Image 1 (cartoon, rainbow, N blue to C red):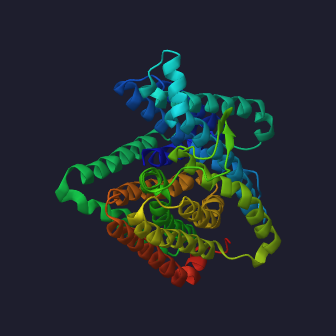
Image 2 (image 1 turned 135 degrees about the vertical axis):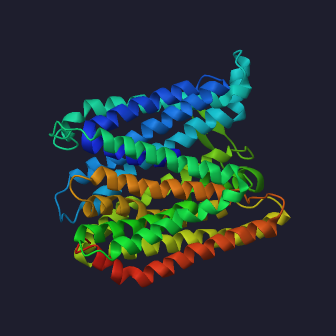
Image 3 (image 1 turned 90 degrees about the horizontal axis):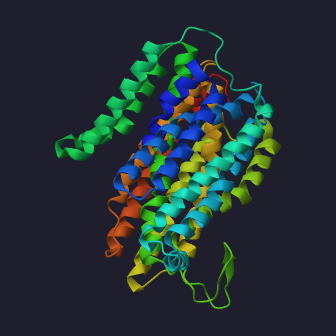
Length: 440
């Protein structure tokens, strides 16, 4: 949650102080340092490393997306396709990372190698953290070497006047928001604060939507998408919690007869078990396979493609469908370990939803935001991801590997809420399109 929450001050700093290009570089350096700190096995370095990753990603995540938007002029039909290609680049790393880091962190072969060479196998996870730091460093080197191709986007603002007071207010507001969220966790009587995650944006949508100013109406549209993406990520971001636990405890992870593959030079034959973390690569594999088709489809359809609100409806529908699929899988777990194809199917459906919503949403924020507030608009977009991650954590707290009926009910209820959100947004599509003021 904090990673996405700091995207708001990160976007503001880029808009008004450093520029997007320099912010991405600084953020990447801090992220790499965070992973290397995580590689040191102690409680203190664990939390210090997480804090560095949070701060660095807050600088990098909104601003690298703003730079992609800056590559296209207003009205360019290729923008959504360009963001789909950008999304492919992100997911190439997301495909490799769980395989490399998951092998180093979880697999018995690497643990055995550590023990044989005098290292503590119980600290294998820290080798995975170090591998992430190496990967980030290589990414930074590529970014610097290829920087001349991006010299025309993401420059620092020309004005010498810097809004330090506004920055202080944004940082204070971010800290206050985080404090409220923490209070809702620590103090039972304040759990009602969680309802504000969606209630406050709905009130803001009505307020901005009733303004006559076109910019205010666009902000109302941004907040509609904010609410929708919060619900989407609340389902999607359980991949690292509910779905990972389902994969670890309830899924058969042995290779079938005749199955074999090689990872990092190690051969796995039939009957071998693979780490549950490998499932985290499935979504990215589908992205790489399907993103070119989606990019081609949006370009091919041109002005005939579904509107952005309609794409969001489709994305929410497939997110709901993915959890409907897990209902029978949960019931079948009462008989023993279930097939891994249930999880593969879930990620397939979620990937379709993600490609209809996430890269399109990134593109949309760059089109709806005023020219000097693109970074801030993307920060609001990522705040939706922050709240979605928080809700995903709350919902994942109901996971149980010993109660198939309870788990199935949890999947079904979450699917119902997500499907209801899709229907509400479908009914609002004409109004949202008016709020967007001609932006498609």
